[in-house]
Length: 142
Image 1 (tube, rainbow, N blue to C red):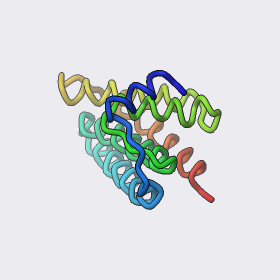
Image 2 (cartoon, rainbow, N blue to C red):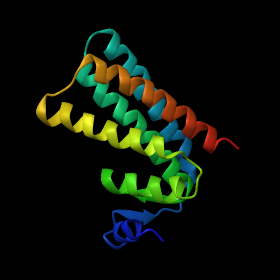
Image 3 (cartoon, rainbow, N blue to C red):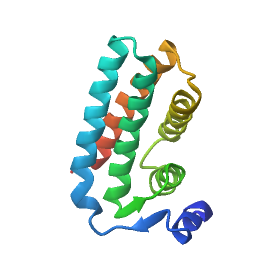
Image 4 (cartoon, rainbow, N blue to C red):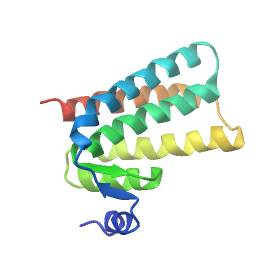
């Protein structure tokens, strides 16, 4: 087992979650909703919010993937660890999706905490969030 995943488990930042599979569709709906709102924000030149909403679309899609494996994360960092361990290392998901999720997290933090955001960053994140959601849906479809 991935040492970072094991550490997240020990610190209760990732937990076994028997109800996970029952919440996958709800998380995907949240991801879709955040993506739609991000598109509206981008269209209205609200680049900060578009950036943040794109990240949360990806966050909910990633959470759906983790729930599908009957785990629940308790930190954004451990969500990344779980995606890497459960999906990238098992070759269910390309590494580029993990990189995109990490970049989205950084851009969200920069927008949220430091007021640093741009139109180009928001547009780039929108494309990546759409791609991430499509890939998550493909993996999770029966």
